Length: 316
Ligand SMILES: [Fe+2]
Image (cartoon, rainbow, N blue to C red; front, side, top):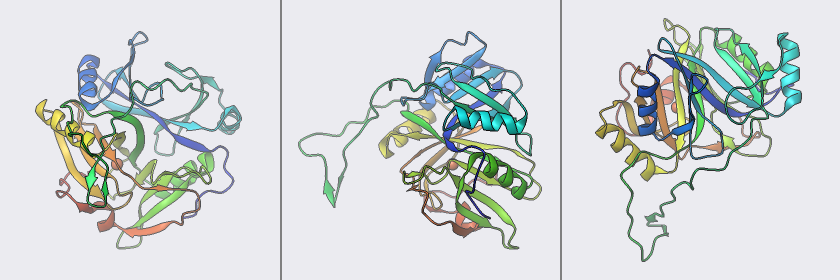
């Protein structure tokens, strides 16, 4: 596959995800245990949750049947939005929720609803992310101080990536590439050489970005659907203490703790009360726009450097 090129707009990062479930209070309780906090009252019928970072919100929930609703992609500026609106033949609208801004609503080839947004204000960080020094053999960072990690939910700082199962990888990639000017970090090939997955990052030139902001996977027999949304936490201690907290609360654990191969991040997957898969991660790879695309196989994508094996239903 080819990446980048002259695109209509350029993605800067993923901004937020939206779900619908029948019980907003139950979702809020789960998300608080997952490490998010309320961004504002659900006065417009939308539950919005933020991390401790500078995004006004990362996770939205509306009342309804359990479903993934949409994802929002932040683009560079109002010119990007105008260009997207012109191509789609739609209007630029006010973006919902705190932070204001504007958006263009689109639908990708599999019917996933995508909002391109711009101008949404950054907000003051809630608190500083924990920074626990480590005494590793090559670097003694903590001297004269005991390490005490508070038993509490993890500190979600930001949304890092969204993974979707798609029906036609080439169609999907053409659509996203032409609109958002993305880059492929890893192209994953099936044994018959079919394109099985793409790990996709944003093009911010010389600025290093997450190894993947989006991941599209195509598995024969699996219809297009949301797979997971991944939230970055402060560090390994924070991820582990968050995992202990969710376990103590009786939530449904999915896979982890382990370290992926593609992207290298330490991962811990959980299910919200309706089964939507959400990931805590830390220590992922960063690449700028000059890093070449890597080609990998399916065992590499599904494998891990350490940790337990994936559950049988992880790809289903
Ligand atoms: Fe992930």
